[in-house]
Image (tube, rainbow, N blue to C red):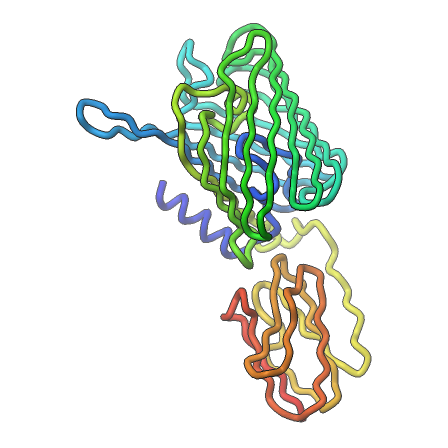
Length: 344
């Protein structure tokens, strides 16, 4: 297991892309997020509780693995797998697998206004056809989320039932958010599922991490709709894998053409490096740095020359060099990225 986890981490570090951000959804709600086309999303949720057993501390774990791939037109397909599920008790089936698809009908994660998604699914442990209608509303740094769920055989019982859930995510800064949610079945009611979380965006990367407390065991439609008898603690992290790095034909968009700067030069930023690490120009020349990467970068000069603010993906920073000299620079979030402009 340790080797498998390490492999996912290394793959994510090798080719990150804009990921599902935990800053925009509560732990027990899937939200309306789908991966970009050609992106494989890996999420890992680990929850646990500690109990005294025969004078010793026993840790009971509830891990859930999510693997999803983005297709065109805001559609994703994927699976949730929990290896210690309490969803089906009679007979007890600890391995819960849910196959799902999601179509985001309108909106986008992080964009102001409404977003709506439809998620059909099948739970193999319960032998149940499940589904969820998700709605998000983002205003400023606040995102409100709601979900209406339906299941044909929840918990493996031949009685169709519905559940509802709601939550909120508040972004305190660009890198930190808090979130909470609650949800439950109706008619008849059961113990409600709830969660609270502190969510962190790792600067300069698409990865997010969440510290959580909850009473829901597995992150499936059924698992997020019923509470467990104990409080669980844990975490979640997100890792995107860009298939373009391994097979270019998976790339979901055409390469962007950049207009030449009149009387100047262009330095593209891609794959965590400045494409031209040493650039020679004449005094009075202009250089444009174009961020073709999937994360934010900066152009920070080592001396007193004014540098750039944060350059978002698809963003540009332009600077004119009036005096001869050597101007080394680097990226502040990724200091291993270096370049130099030599002005004659």
